[in-house]
Structure formats: C-alpha cells, structure tokens
Image 1 (tube, one colour):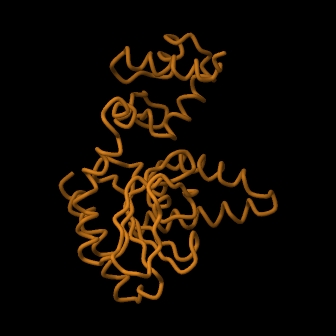
Image 2: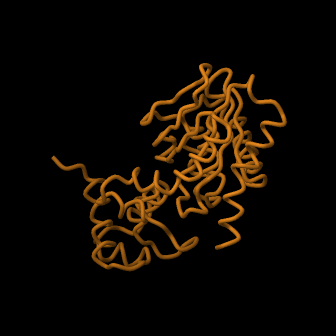
Length: 245
C-alpha cells in the first residue's frame, strides 16, 4: 500500500521535473492537484533537505542540483571531486584527519574521510551520522542557511530535548550559529568526542551549500598557533572563491 505523503511528494517532484522551470506555490498546487497548505509543507521539507531550491522568501521553487545528481553515478563522487583539492592540501599540510560532511535532515553524514598518519587519532567512518548541532561540520553548513531554514532545523533538534532544557539549547544554538556565520568557520571542542577538536568551513563557495569540510585534531595537538594556522588554511580557499564570484 502506498503512503499518502510519499505519493504527494513525488507528485510535486514530477510536476517540477515536467515543467522544467521554476514554479510558484500556486502553480505547483494547481498542477499537482494538492491543497496549497499541503504543497507548501512538502516543498518546505524538500527545501530543508536540499532537494528543491527557492529563489527567495515566498519565491518560485525549482529542482536542486542535489536531486538532479541522484540519477548520476554517485552524488558523493561528484562532491568528493569538488572537495578533494582542499582536503588533500589540508591533509598534506597538517597531517590530521580531514572530513567531508553532508547535511541530511538534522544530521550530518560523513561522505569521505582522509585519515591522519598519527597513531593518536579519532576516525569517523564514511556513512556515520551525527546531529548537526554537535559538530563543526553541521554548524558550518547551517550557519550559512536562510534564517527561516535555520529556525526549523533548530526547532527539530529542540523537539527531541526534554522540555525543561529546550529554551537553553535553542538560545545556545542561536548564539553559536550567529558566531559561526560572523567569523566564517565553525569550531567544536570535545562536544562530539572527548579529547577531539574540529574546525570546519562550508563548501557554499563551491556551490555545495549543504556540505562542509572539517579537520579533526586531538586537543593535545591543538595549541593556539596551530589552531590559527589551521583556521587560516581552511578560510583561504573560501575567500578566493568568494572574490571570484
């Protein structure tokens, strides 16, 4: 038996694919024969997941590159090709573990990992997932998203928290995402794993706003000067690409 919401979701995606252009909510609701509020809720979820994009608040919707690439041989392959120059450069310069992460719902999935040669290390296997708010990867991605999309993701995270702690968590995440956006990188120290710090930047300058690269470093190999050098190395490609845009 088909699931009603899946039927409606694919109806909307098929309409967008058939139209071959950006379409308004009214157009999509009419063509898919769905009530406007239902179409809006589904499109909002698809946008949060990165499968459709919206031109601006209240603007037209279109299929994203992420959805279009599902039919190609491995979206992760395409993403790795884009991230590889930066990741290999960081790995060669610092010999620490370099991670490529992709936002999927409220989680970050590790799509590729270049391992350090040091004996003391923390390795995350490709395919593993962490809640976005506990990782530098996730914060780097979400900090660059529109405020409305950010708020929805934070609300979903908070909904899984005991009611008594939701307000404090929401405020902490708001401050952290704001700081991340202002400084241009995300920093996480011993929040996901004891003894490990991570620094991350979004790959939005590579037209991959739902992906980020991070470097994981044991805290005993992370003095202030090394931290500053690592942050500078992560930010240089971002600044160069932004200047070219």
